[in-house]
Length: 120
Image 1 (cartoon, rainbow, N blue to C red):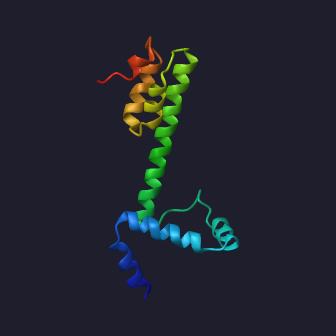
Image 2: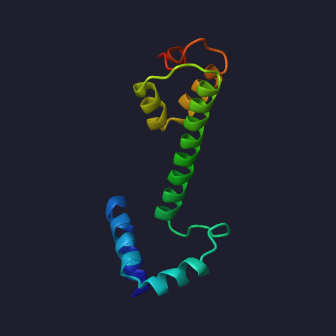
Image 3: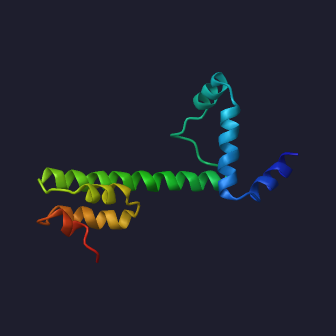
C-alpha cells in the first residue's frame, strides 16, 4: 500500500504536492503538530523526497536573495544615497542572487542609487 501511495504522489505536479502536504499538516491537532516539530530537528534533517529537496533549495535561494537585497539597501542607506520608493521596491523584490551581488558591489562605490540599478 505504501509503495502505491509513493508512486501516486510521484505523479502529482508540484503545486498539488504542496497543497496535499499543507492539508496533512493542517489536519494535525496542535498537540500532534508540536510533537512532529519536536521530533524533526530541522538542522539535522535531510529531505527524503525530491519535492522536499526542491522546497529546501528554493527556501535557501530565497533567503540568500532576501539577505543580499537587505545588504544592498543597507549600504545605500549607510552611504546616505537617496532611494525612491520604486528603487526600494525593486531591490526588495529581486530574487536574482547574481544580479543582487552585482548591485551590492556597485552600491559601495556609486554616486547615486540609480547607478546601482542601471541595466548592464
